[in-house]
Image (cartoon, rainbow over all chains, first blue to last red; front, side):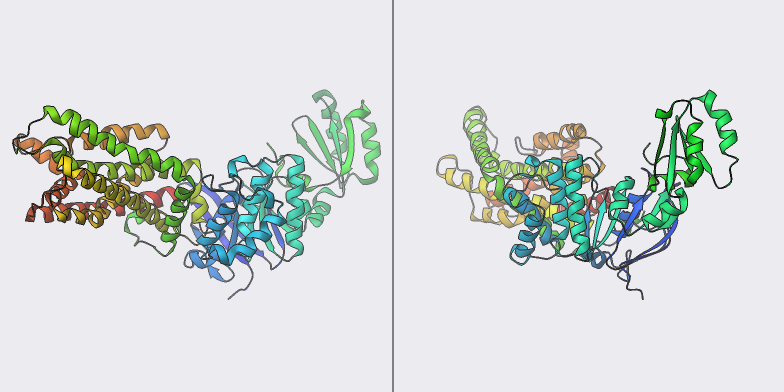
Length: 307
Length: 264
């Protein structure tokens, strides 16, 4: 029996004839932040739903703390804290009452959960809004309340589905800051995101998903290093310029080129990149930057993460 | 289909769901309660006294007295329908409340059972209140004739389950809020008018009486009428059995319907 927080072996999810998750395997280790990065429709949320027992696994084996998600759903769910993509907070209840009622679903009375609720509210800077209606909160506050709600029963694993989608930059940074704090406290976290910077910021390890499969797995920095070669040259060029350019650059050893819309990405150019950039007629349209997870995805699929 | 054959997975979680709804009511009680307390009184006065003046029944009974069991059956039906048709749909689709709850150790069956228990609670509260009003007005309107009427309070839980479950069944197949007008106009409203609350069935043609047998509310009205009049007969047991079996069947369908809706 395994004691890893989550272990998945060849899990498949089919909806009728559509395969949303096509035989993926992964292990989430204790205390780490594990990410699922990929575009919309890659199968990230479906995977999260299978872990949280709200969507049955079609095939394969999936365990949480050694418990089978199909057979021991209640025991599995009691170990998880879920932050869903859409804030399904209870608008009929006040901020504090939301946490009390939710704690009760885990078998904790308002009294038992009281200290946890106070702590979660103060950690997420919501103490002053405790008596307010949920609908009166800003988007960022709602998301923080949703995370607080997932923590009141002290779960072993915190699961976040697109934790900062739809938030403005400031709210987003505050959420990240809080999540880093939780990570420092040793909370095991699983998150899905289609923002590469979010994944790079928070995840110790991640898998990149595309069309229901895992393309690659590793530490964000290693993946970037391996697939983008450190730095990337971005060029905006029209079709006339592009054809001879591709013919020439594509032939250089160790250099890879990807085209997305009107941008040409050159990977692994290293010291020859300056020479390559010179070939572009307008220097304002050439841009050298460090590689990132988006490039990893681009290299593996030939397309961008956000489409 | 597996959603129909799985045995129910029910725990204490159902009570947690019931508590959630109770807490919401306690937060909103002012706006929820006051208006509802007035409505039955208005109807008793308008129909019982106002319309009743012009109605002469063969039985010689006063119209207000004839009306009483119907009102005690009908208003609780509306209470259950309000909670479990509109209310459930809002919690299912608009607020995401059900999905939030089933992510905790509470199961889909717990949620639906808790919702039905809550609709039933509102039903029993409502029936008790109207029975109380009718009893208070009895010196003038002769609405409650027999102490057996007090049995209505516990018994009203069974039609409470029935109407709550019927409502959840509809909520589980509804795709938009606007579809509830079908439910109301094709199911609830006809039941309201033809459930035996407003006119007696005995003089209707045979086919109409057969049709009435299929209307759930007609059995509730008939049962309450027997208890309020102190007219205890075996037919009341048959009515009670009808309601109980139907409640069981619709409860099962409600569970199956919501499993289909909530388990992806």
